[in-house]
Structures are given as structure tokens and as C-alpha cells.
Length: 516
Image (cartoon, rainbow, N blue to C red; front, side, top):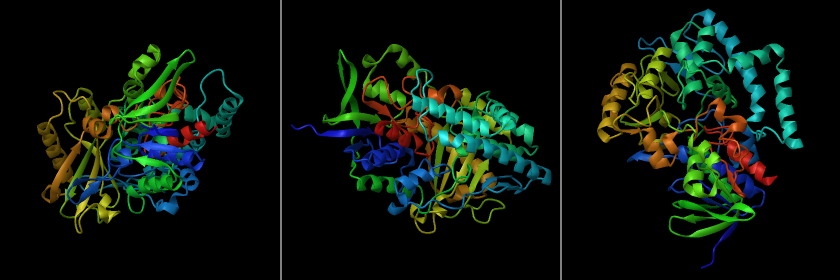
């Protein structure tokens, strides 16, 4: 039997894998992209969760780079970036909501409005200084090439251009817990909880966690809407469809339902080299290089195997913090949900009355329990894309923090049913009679995300976004520049620099390294 050969084989058809495939295919390489499931897009794949009702785990975009849209000509393939972002609306039980837009805030005293203007202007300056480096390979420490030294010089120059005062403030701010930064600037508990949300969502950190949640917030502020979320015209599906069709247009061979069981390794006196992949059905395909868009633990433990790698390297991969803390709630609704004080629920709603509520939810999850009082963000994506639900009906999509991957006693259908009831009770407080409109409810725990989306621990970012797992240390040294200890094996998933979210920078950066 003839074995097919490609210039490049990419394992994993999430958005990073698709971005990487596009750049390599556009450069003339013969590329094969293999996806284990029926759908491309990974956590951004749109799927039917109940007859007639569709949703994606990643339900909005806040940082997909205009450079990738332009480079890959995605508008030609139907992708339209929304020029207007959604408002972040912090829901109040009495209807006195706090509204955060790209331009300012309302629902708080004038003193807070003025302080917010100073606060957000400062963060925008910091985000702008860091923005170019999310789309670059972060050089390793020591033994650098001239090009890598120049990258370090660019980083230093960008920070220097901030000025001494702002540079000192940036270094101070990124080391603060979210709680400290909010308490320094604001009095409104509802506002503080809402502004801290995007520093914490998707992580295992709480408002008081002494880590770099503010650096994560600045990372999320690099998009055209400075961190505000949007849903593109036609929904998230249009981004994945555009990336898919653009890849096909440049000759990428895409195969779904093609799970890779292992990466073929050749070990000899010259070292260890990746030479192909073996599929679940036993088929072998060879390539000049293999790129994994899967998370680091799957890549090195499951596909490569510990026998081919140094024990110290594998110990570092094993120590990566990969337990997810976000669950996804999808509701099929018979009618539009009516939130108190909201005319049309076409924005992003935050249910977190204060920072203590967020902290207490984290405390529950830390001990393996579901939060007694859930905190969550909610959107109604069917208002932006009517194809997600039958006419006159709707889909509600919520990210619920903090829900443990390792639940005490384990996850069962009964445990999920109990938690769904608690979530509906919470939602009913802000949208009366919502429960009566529920046709079907789906709860996806981090354990479900691991099982059905093949993401270790169900973690959005494949590994925690924290100072010891970011920049030139992501996911760990010897694999932090998209190359690995195995020759001709590269990585391009969310576990690489800069991280996860619907950004595509890791796929872009890996392709640039390979094309060099």
C-alpha cells in the first residue's frame, strides 16, 4: 500500500491549526490537516445541542487579529468583523445595572466615571505597548541569534517609549491581584466585579490570587475593541468557515473524523525525529514535519510517548496546570429571555454582584465543590445569528465560573442536573420566568470538555495563563518557540505563546517559525 507524503501534517483542526495551515498552504507547502471530530474549529465549532438549536463553546470574540484577517483575505470567504462591540452589562437585582462600553461607563456616580476614564486609558497604553509581542516568537533566554536579540531590543524600546513613570506603573500593575487594582480605583462593588471578570475568566485564579491576572487582562485587550467582545455577522461559525474555505483555496487537504493515534518517531544516532502519523484506522501518513495543535500533555504524552523524550522535559510538561474551572451552559428557549431593565438582551451580561461573590465561588471550586452562589457571563447569540434556533425561539449561552474539573465525588448526570437547577434559579432572579421558557438545558463541565473536545483538563488555554507559563516559558523551555526536543515536530496550539482565546496568534507564529 502506498503511503501518502506531505510537506507538513497538522494534527488538530481548531482555529490555531487552521490559521497555521493557511499560512503554510499559502506559502506553497503541501499540507494535510487532520481533525479527530466531525467538525472543525475545536471549542469554536458550532454544533447542535438539541434538535434545531445550535451553539459553540467559544461564544464571542474579543481579540482576533486584523493582521490574520488581512493576510488570509478572510473577508473574501465570508468573515466580517463587527465594527461595534457588545456592552458589558453588570446585572443588578433591582435593575440598577452598570454598563461598560468601549467608550465609557454608566450606572455609577460621576466620580467613578471620571476615574474609569483614567483607569482604562492607562490600561490601553499598557496593552498597546505589549500588543506587537503576542504576534511574535518570544526568544529563549541565552544563546540568542541576532534576530532574537533584536526582538528583545524591540520589547525594551516599546516599554521605554511608555516613559519612566508608565513603565514603572506597568511593572507594578501586572503583579497585582485583580482585587487590589479594582480597590485602588473604584468604590462600586458591581463595577469592580465586572471589570475584574476578563482578568479571571478561563483561569484558576480568584480576585485575591497573587499572580498575573492583570497581564491576562492586557492580553485580552489587544483586539480592535480593546477587550470588549463582539459576535461577527453570522456568528462564530463564519470565522471557522472562512478559515476552512481559505485553507481549501490554497490547497490544504482537510480530513475530519481522522483521529491521530500516535506520531511516528525515528530514533537513531543523529537524534529523535518525527516522520509521520498513524491514524486510529491504522493508516500511516508521512511528512517532512509534523505540527500539533493539541495541548502539550496530549502531544508529548499521548502522541510522542515518554520513551522518546528526556525525563526532565516530561516532568515539566506533567507539572503544567491544566485543570479547567469554567463550565458551559446552553439553554434552548421557547421565547426571548426578558432580563429586568433590559429592552433587548443583545449584549454581554455579567452576574457577579461583587468581588466577594467571585472569590467565594472560587473557594467552593478549590475544594472540589460547585459554587453555592454561581457567577457567570451570559449572552443570547441567536439574536446575532437567527440560524442558531428555530424561528421565534432562542439560545442562551453562559460561561459559569468556577466549576471544578475534579469534582468531589465525581461528575454524574444527577450532579449535573442539581447544578443546572441552581444555575436556572440564579438566572430567574435576573430574568423572571426564564425557567418556564427552557425547552432543554445542556451543561458542559470541564470534564465534558476534556472528553468531547479532547482538551486536557477541559482548560480553555490548554495550560494556565500564569507568569511561569507565559511568554518565553510557554508551555516550558525547550518547547517555547514552537519547536520541540523532537526534530521536525512543532506545536501551535493554545498551550504555546501567547495563549488561548479566539486569537490565532499561536498558529500564525508557528507558521512564521517554520517558514523561516
